[in-house]
Amino acid sequence: MLGRVTSSPAPTGHRVHKERLDPGRTDYAGAVYGSLLAASVVATAGTAGDFPRLQLLALLLVTGVVFWVAHVYAQIAGERVVGRPIDRRELRRVARHEWSIAEAAVLPAVAVALSPVLGLDPSGTAWLALAVAVAQQVAWATLGAIRAGASHRMAVGEGVVNLLLGLVIVAAKAALGH
Image 1 (cartoon, rainbow, N blue to C red):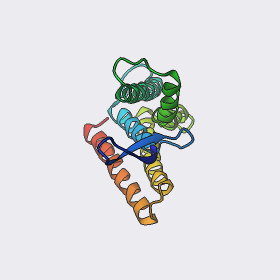
Image 2 (tube, rainbow, N blue to C red):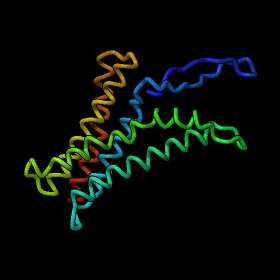
Image 3 (spheres, rainbow, N blue to C red):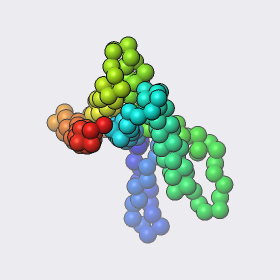
């Protein structure tokens, strides 16, 4: 959820819808996107290397942060007038709003960090992290729909669609034998 949508008159007399980012609201779309990104990282990361858990944990966190920075930059660059400097206040506001993309990597990373306590090998660790990423993706999509005022049926539909997207990644991981 990106925030409230407001209408303002356009120069031609038509009404234009402009999104306002509300820093007090969770960016559910960003959280869903970040969760899908985390699931993709886990699914494509091999277990090769001397420290597979540490490498997967670092890959999850670094990828989340890099994509967060990319989204912040894209939003700031896309909204500013060419030739005008970047407004630091606007940069901080957008960075806070998009932070859910990076945050979505945290729970799968925690699952990776806790996997030795659960007695999981590197393969089991990857499957646990993937399950956590997909579960949080479904949860964020469902909560976002509820927060937007969707009916229970629509909220469940959002959850199902996101579960199916997650399962595509799970199927790809299984098919690739990682």
